[in-house]
Image 1 (cartoon, rainbow, N blue to C red):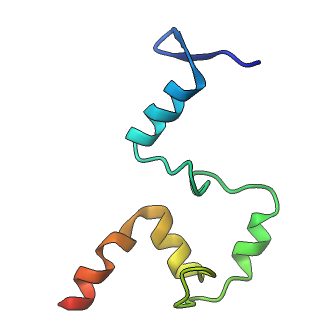
Image 2: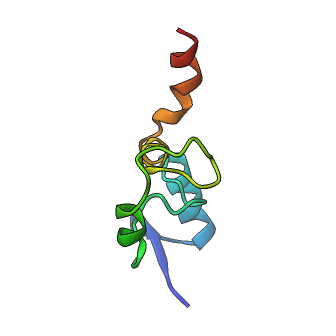
Amino acid sequence: MSDYYIDDNKVKAEDVTSLLLTKGIDLNNNRFLILQGEVESISIMKPKSGNSENPGLLEYLEDIIGSGVHKETIEKN
């Protein structure tokens, strides 16, 4: 079992998860890191797919940096 610390205080894993989520780190989709084997998958992505279930590179990057939340507003203007 691992020990977790925040500001030199021993905490539960759930506390670390909560802190990271409040800082905007997307733990649900693992977008905060690129796992082994994903580099090749990313390199062969289509530039843009238009399909949320099978994203292209543009959608993938929008998801990582968070700009996708503004897409609807931009398209209206």
